[in-house]
Image (tube, rainbow, N blue to C red; front, top):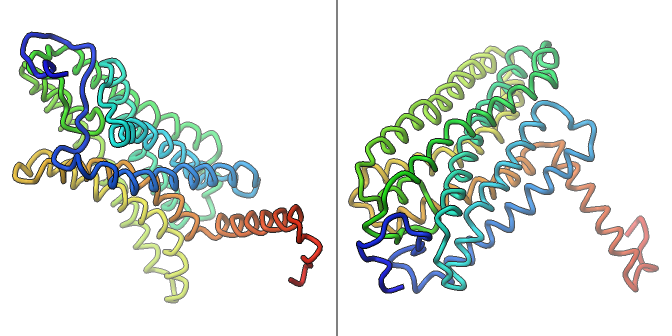
Length: 331
């Protein structure tokens, strides 16, 4: 381990993830909220998938996109947290170079997919509010399938150069990465080569991907607001716009920390490294945790199914308990 930082190797077989430099003594304490967020994300997103799958009345565009979002969140959070927790709990910092590149691809690929899903959900809200009579004819199952396929292909193809670019560089300086996971720029910064092509391609992805997605979402909501404000009563305006609150909250929980992390990474040279790494983890862990909570609380159909599931569970527990005879429908 002591000679990992020497300069006499090229393309090491593994990298060493430091975790959060400067906060090594607090790794165990930091793992508690991280593990809690991950558990909530796994449980919440699986519940969303289960509810939509078992209820035919929820088999519509909005819920198909919500299921796609849940799957993306599950993959995204699982891509980083098991390795992060192994660093925090067991000091298991080594990661094979090929595994590092695979993790890099999955993280950035599913982040791009999640951004695309938010655009698709914004389009669904736009059609539902601005042209409600044609919603079912515009967003048919085949159209939804094509949108999902386009989102998946876009994310997969745009991020595909990342591992190939990272693999081609010679890593003759160090194989130590001051991070909890294999983020693209954090990895290629360790190369002893001119990595401007990686930096330019990352900038291209931000402009053509996330920035363009935010533009389309903004355009959709401008049209939605116009339609909402044209309604005759304030109650109708609030009720109609209320159908977008869940989507807006999810968008903010995703884009705000993502943009903050990106800007501090590119321009915040005076920002402490441990703060940047914490933000890089938060923007991959908080949205998967918040999305099922937001949609579970704000979406009446899902909230009603959750209440029914809870009542069924309570009934089963009472029936199998020793005091089951004390239970009655009135009690």
